[in-house]
Length: 161
Image (cartoon, rainbow, N blue to C red; front, side):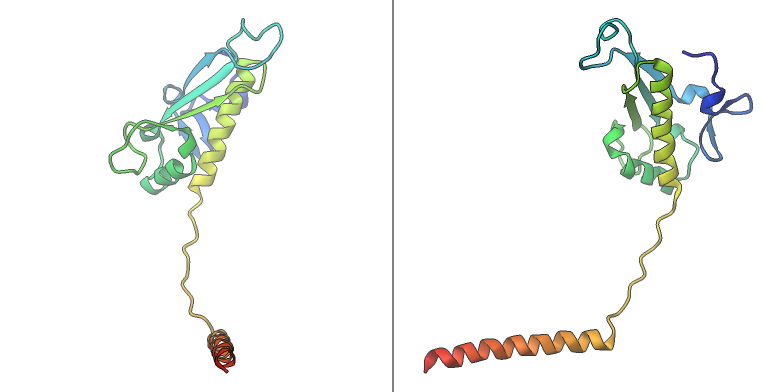
């Protein structure tokens, strides 16, 4: 891996910061590196630069509703089965990055994608407030229905004569 980890939020006091105010132990984030696909020049078949990040959803220190939103927002990255559908035990996020030529930059790209997902999932959705249509809207709808019915009635009357 790389020696200088200060740029990805690593500290001695609790692992890696993966989102604002959210730290996980380094063992929770499992990285592997594989050969990248596609055209690439001299390094394409020699270097394993594609980074693959695996994180068990159950290992993330977030509440149940946030974990459910992570499962919904990141469903393209989910692997595994979960009995109750809330993204708990047995479900992993698998995030891959291969757009850079170095392992370090691809690793950082994976962490950036994870951070973006977590930040989006930690925002509680605003509940929908049901509203009633106003009096004017009700009257316009009923008037339009009446006019449509009269138009059809005129067509019937004009066709029989």
